[in-house]
Amino acid sequence: MYGNKESALEPTVRTTLKRHPERGAFEVEQIQSILDEGFVCHVGFTTEHGPAVIPTTYGRVGDTLYLHGSPASRMLRNLKAGLPVCVTVTLIDALVLARSTYHHSMNFRSVVVYGTAVEVKDLEEKAAALASFVEHIVPGRTAEARAATEGELRGTLVLALPLAEASAKLRTGGPIDDEADLGLPVWGGVLPISTTFGAPQPDEHTPAGAAAPDYLVGYHR
Amino acid sequence: MYGNKESALEPTVRTTLKRHPERGAFEVEQIQSILDEGFVCHVGFTTEHGPAVIPTTYGRVGDTLYLHGSPASRMLRNLKAGLPVCVTVTLIDALVLARSTYHHSMNFRSVVVYGTAVEVKDLEEKAAALASFVEHIVPGRTAEARAATEGELRGTLVLALPLAEASAKLRTGGPIDDEADLGLPVWGGVLPISTTFGAPQPDEHTPAGAAAPDYLVGYHR
Image 1 (tube, each protein chain N blue to C red):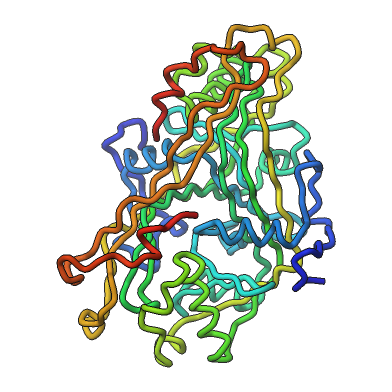
Image 2 (image 1 turned 90 degrees about the vertical axis):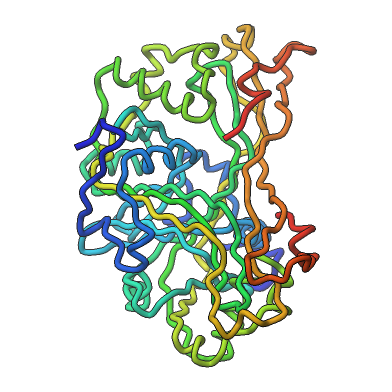
């Protein structure tokens, strides 16, 4: 059902929005573009102590989302054992100022993925998955940075979560005020939000005067 | 145990970091400042279909975090019934570029809150809670925007989650490379990330030429 960017996912009981269904989207291209723009996901799972939500980085290759970390990570060990997981990525695009406090809102794009993750054991897939974490954040970086050694690959737990049961949710546009409030002398509209990047800051091991790589100087999201 | 900003929370089995314990923080001031800088939280809970993680806005008054929404919201109805909840707020401060792909990282600040939410029924507390959602996002706005009517207050479900079992987690600084990689001809350091704001965009009901309020023109986070 995937692979083709113009395709759409089937809604399920978990991905169907009960409230504001008009904000839901199931197009693969939409879902992928939100995932690719985010820096971290929030991973939700249930432990013996109740629900937990942990922020972590991720990678994507085609229709697979990858999570990774230490083999000692409680979260990853739980998920590897087949615990159901929910992974959410959220981007905030604007503050929406209505004339009433009641109708204030935000413009956002989010993706929620439900499923069960499986461990990636094949070293070749593992290497590609780990490279995707870096390329996801800084495209071009893996051509320069030292690739993972076999020891590093074996010492990292990588989980694959299929992007099969997923949906996007979006809000765009200005405030939606009550008709009766439109005449109030209150400024209404939106304040756009961007993620911007400062000058690259070399550490003490980078030779003085070494130029920062082009993929950092021109970095944008 | 709270109220005093210089105080610290007691670690619990859920808020004690098993990995990188040096990144954990329990100071109330630290926790509050991260919560106050975030725009959305990720709310985790367990449904009959497994874990769910939903992004939503929030407010804070003292040592209480507020969630709100429609009384028909499945998430809020579940939480109101006493379902345990985990609320996480994450801020990303920098991309951390190491010489090996393996040691790439991010600088971040996050807060995780565990607990059980209770419904706010008192209209006065409800009004203060709803105002805190707007003030949290745009300080100064509630002095101008129309306050919630009694009907709006009654038609909104507000939940209070005590900031009692919570912790912060932080990473700062540059890459931590393997000694053997330090001589590689690879740029290492950090790329700082900021959240910035565009010019306020009035909607079609704001009179042409009306100046945007100072709290928007000078907005920063």
